[in-house]
Amino acid sequence: MAKRILIAEDDLGSRELLTIHAKSHGYEVVAVTDGVDLLTTSASERFDLIITDLKMKNLDGASATEVMKMQGSMVPVIALTALSPRDIHLVKDKFNKIYYKPCDYRDLFEYIETLIGK
Image (cartoon, rainbow, N blue to C red; front, side, top):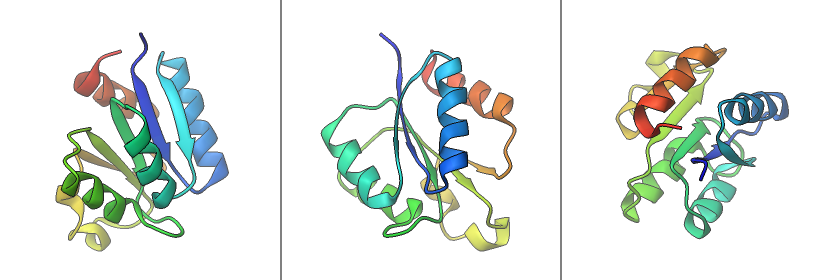
C-alpha cells in the first residue's frame, strides 16, 4: 500500500507541482487549498506525512499544525515557505523541516523517504 501525503498549498501551480512530484515518487496524494481544509482532511483520513505552505488564506500552516499537535497528531509535517528565515523564527520548531521556495524537489523527496519510506 502506498504511503499517503496530504499537501496544503494555496497556490495552484505549486500544489500541482508538488502533487506531480509526490506521485512520481510513488506516494498517494490528497491536496487541499488552505489550513481549514488541512485540519478537516487530516482529521477524517489517515496520512503518513503532511506538506504545508506556511502562508495561506483562512488559516496558515503553522496554526493548523499547532492545532493538529494539540489534538495528538504524530504525523510528520514539512513546511514550505517563501518567507525569510527571520520571518519564521517563532514557528520553525513546529515542523520536522522547513524548505524555502523554490525548493529542491530531489532534496525534499529524499528527506521524505528518510521520514516515511516509500
